[in-house]
Image (cartoon, one colour):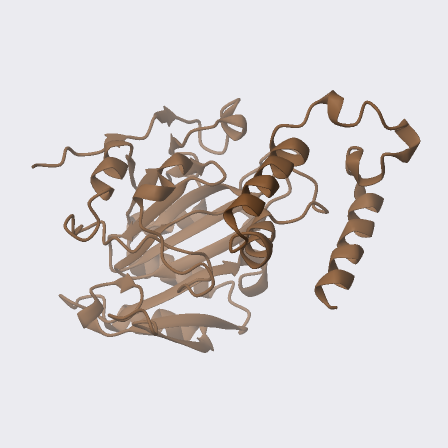
Length: 337
């Protein structure tokens, strides 16, 4: 049975530096062509990899970065070993210029070793570079990170924040899956993953449909964005995305943020606590708790608290920062019992 090519992500032509209206409220991915095409770093990358490399070095402050290094045999795939007992790469601290030297050394290799720097705060290692290479997101105050490497294959994963990912050097292919494809992606361990966030165990380049048959269904819902230097991609919260770095020198800068106040908790913490406290209860008790969560968290309405005087609703009232601090303190106290 042949597999059709996934459909393309919806594309928008952009005036460089100007985010189209409505993008940050979108519930689906959007390819933003040429959004950062006028950044000096992008212009350098269009000249050559060496020009972009040199531009980055102008801003480097000497601080170390975390580098993932793997042998040529892993073919760029940052992943586990065969039995998932360890990873197929090692992580080490190194200077960014030494990392760039290694990329340059292997730039002509047919099958180079993997060299990869994952999410690193731009201002931490490249102070000043955002003065002329930056994107305004209006009232949003994002975390701005940089990713660098040669030919890499990053397994499908999701992030809680919304994300605008800007390709500034090299080419990348993003394959995205909507959140409702979770059961078809064959996700690995929740507490042990190459970059911390759980990943799909399917190699998208050569999917094993005998081992992962439901992945055929996931592919029917997939969307693909092929990106050049200057392009950006809006990835909504919780969308799964698989990322291929296609050149011997790839650089991406991304902006991520949550559309809720900073004092709100991370839903992943709730999932982990539920694994600890609910999943292994007897069936009857677990169903009771499912109903309780629906009542208070997933399907609440005014009737839930209508019978309680407004001043006595406590944490059942809309959460504000003081209440969030109170709840966090209560949780810490109970978890540390």
